[in-house]
Length: 79
Image 1: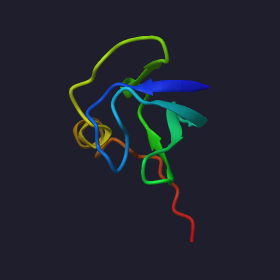
Image 2: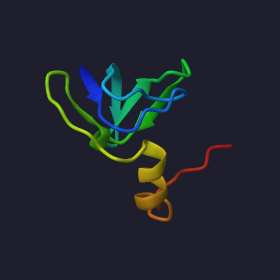
Image 3: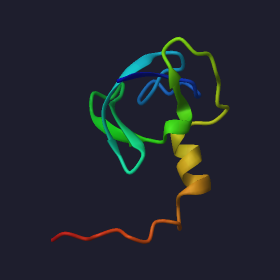
């Protein structure tokens, strides 16, 4: 599956308007190889179908700080 990123460009992570290949969906988030060359999970709110237009005036890290921090309760620590 391919989706277009519609957030603020960050040259080290994602570029606005660029289409990325979704490698996997984990707990509803998209695993994508970003501009760093590494794969990370990103919230789906920042992506639309390839042919759609859209824009989110935020970055995924802003979204995470504003919505996710403190809400994660089922993390399993593996040693």
